[in-house]
Length: 158
Image (cartoon, rainbow, N blue to C red; front, side, top):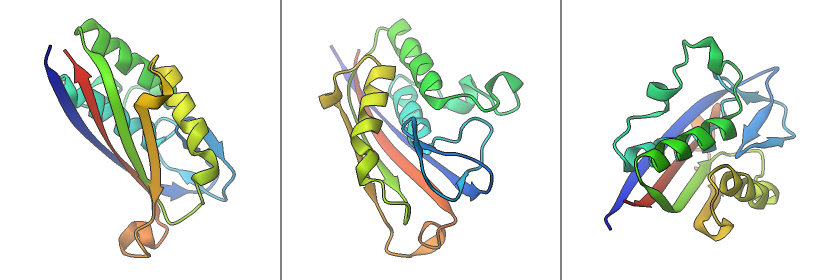
């Protein structure tokens, strides 16, 4: 059995009149993230990491933003579909490690629920899903609170 890893990254700018969804959790905040789907940067970064591990491109290839079918789509649904792609290729997810990059809002109270949502979407044990949050100490676009980013690494057995 081989192990393969993938890396994912996603970033979206803040926008008014949108819900802020991270890891499938609706966070009480004055702004949401701009995007074609629900703009859940955490799920998008994880999806890209998983797709990268099996050389299947990125979420834009599988869920293009010019397809009305994916307008306002729940990113947990996209993550489940990515899990199905991996299963079809004979890959079993070993673990996921992700970090959200945001100055605000405070995310610590939501991390466990995010982990549960991601684990459920991918039929994983929660101990195989790690989610963390960090700031960039007010540096750059994310430090100026212009948006939120996430990065992820995923390993699979093939």
